[in-house]
Image 1 (tube, rainbow, N blue to C red):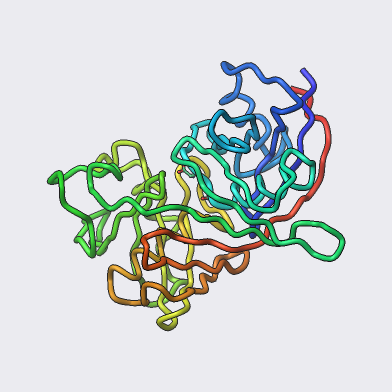
Image 2 (image 1 turned 90 degrees about the vertical axis):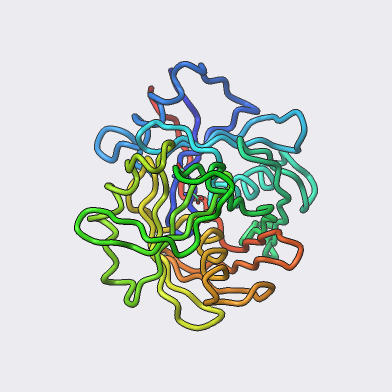
Amino acid sequence: MKIPFTKMHGLGNNYIYIDLFHTELPEDRLSELAVKMSNQNTGIGSDGMILIHPAETADVGMRIFNKDGSEGMNCGNGLRCTAKYAYETGIVKKSEFTIQTKANIVQAIVHKNSGQEVEKVTIDMGEPILQREQIPMLGEAGTTVIDEPFPVADTTLQVTAVSMGNPHVITVVDAIDEAPLTTLGPIIEKDERFPEGVNTEFIEIVSDEEIHFRVWERGSGVTEACGTGACAAVVAATLNDKVTKGKQIVVHLAGGDLMIEWKEDGHIWMTGGAETIASGIFNA
Ligand SMILES: N[C@@H](CCC[C@H](N)C(=O)O)C(=O)O
């Protein structure tokens, strides 16, 4: 099978994008294809695979598969790249449009340069989910998880759990470069208290409008950036009284910066870059 693809990234979080408006893929091979394409030695090399597809109730649809073949519900960096692709290829002809994910339908606004290329994208990511059982995280139903002790390995973290359609657990640390990302990230990802696994983020508060951020992603490991994670991190920082709701927060990720605002109406807005790396044919 020969599959046309485009490799794109948002702040270094890179995926292989397949345009299902013009290509067909068998549903029973999607997981296997994501693993194959993501392999750096025998594939293209990526954090996973994203499908851009026709949607019934939105202008365009998006599905995300992690590097290990598991399907995620949402992907912030993927949404910005999908918006850029859909606009630049003419799938959508307006600069404000909707994208459907497995989690929800979001609003995208593309920002172009003088050459009509999309440089940045703003997404209204909707409202965060804080109810424990909806994250999902084990424990007393109907409660939230804010600055809760979380014993793991030989330490106890203070964690806040947030779903952006996909699960995130956030810990505030004093120094981001010393965060136990690669030691605790893989353990927390598979911890039984998170029945569907979890994306693990560490943040350092710089000021009430600036934070540093690092992520261990469920299904992909360390990545340069995570859009849903950055939104969840701003929610966690707000709930822990570290930043102010209604203010634009600069999130410094390993691959660059995102501007995130948790607005007074409860919606989270994310603005950041989206870039095309290469296009080609994958021999599956
Ligand atoms: N990198 C993404 C999130 C991708 C999915 C995640 N690993 C999951 O399984 O929930 C982002 O930019 O949000």
